[in-house]
Image 1 (cartoon, rainbow, N blue to C red):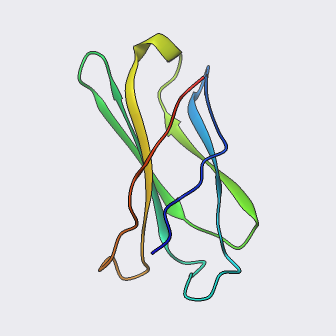
Image 2 (cartoon, rainbow, N blue to C red):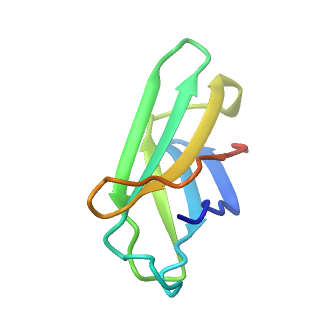
Image 3 (tube, rainbow, N blue to C red):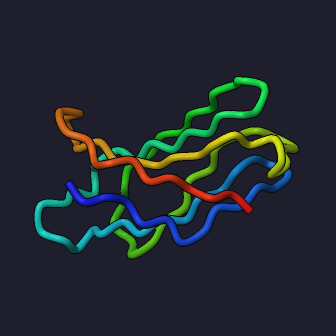
Length: 97
């Protein structure tokens, strides 16, 4: 499974929004695959968001955490599970700005 490309990740009033390339037109990629984004805060909280990959060229996923600031984020990653959950891509480390 292809690693995920994440061109941008931004902290905002509603949480962390990650924009990623879906690779929906790549052979073997299903629009029904599950994208998983997670962030860990410096206080140890782990926040997870999930959604289907979709068929657009790029998509965005929101990790909900109202009011989070960049300096509160310890780390952030994104990966993809195939449609039946039996295989996962390598995780992609994301720099949040």
